[in-house]
Length: 175
Image 1 (cartoon, rainbow, N blue to C red):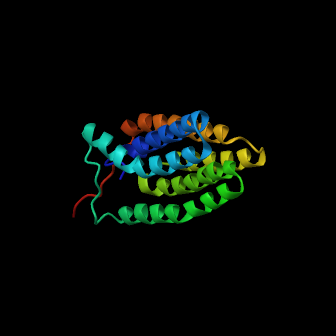
Image 2 (image 1 turned 45 degrees about the vertical axis):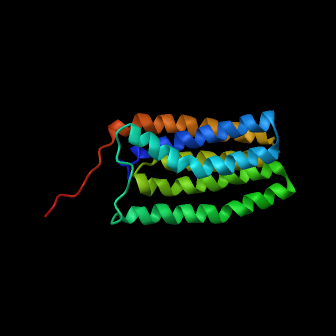
């Protein structure tokens, strides 16, 4: 997974850009449009990341025999199942949607430690989760939340890109 998806860095960086785009929509338009921007942009993270990875010469496809492919799909389905909770929060207070999404996505990144074999994903998931809680407890505006999510993910995406050449994929010897 690490070599096929460039350590997950491209997806994290694209996700950060989606958060920053959402912040721009929120600032210039409305909360409703920002929610849709995050949802639609989030759905496009994998296809855009795959396209970028292919343009960089990576295979960007996993072997169906790889057990980690199943974990990636299971984590994605679980994340999709929790998004209605965040949407329900938005019906009470719009800010809670974005804070809920930060928490959901942070939890999703925790599984990336296993998918990519990189403990930086624990840091990323933890930062998003702690930020979500802090922003909620501080009653922060949605713009602060979306900028925070974007900033954390762009910085961590760049860090993961920098970490990629240092990590070698270890494949078991054939017997």
